Image 1 (cartoon, helix red, strand yellow):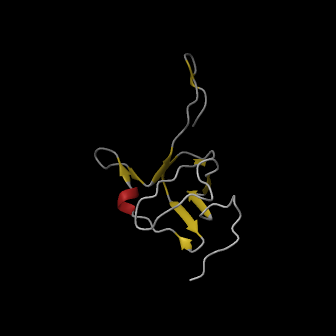
Image 2 (cartoon, one colour):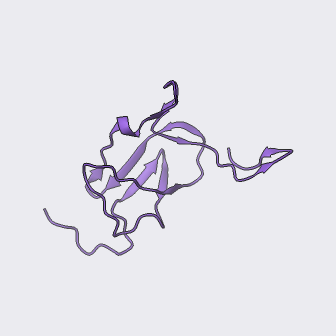
Image 3 (cartoon, one colour):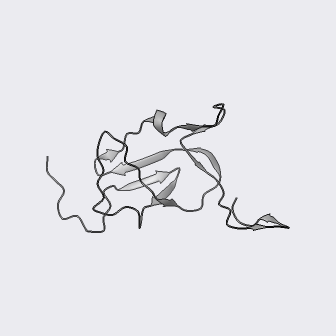
Length: 107
């Protein structure tokens, strides 16, 4: 197997990551020198832009060699009685609360 050569210093180790249809921005969190290992958990932090509120979204991560395999059991989160389970969920961001109006930003 040949190694990929001449990779730009600002290229990420993966091609793309999405939650639902929105791309995840890893700027300032992942660098071209960040290492990921196969067969173990590799947490990654990123930001995703404004989206509609959704109860369950797909998570996809594309590498040079194809999409990452994910373990649905470890990615799935549920509430205490398992009536609400999800892989990824989008919720409103509340940046300020007004005494008379309630929250003034978010969904």
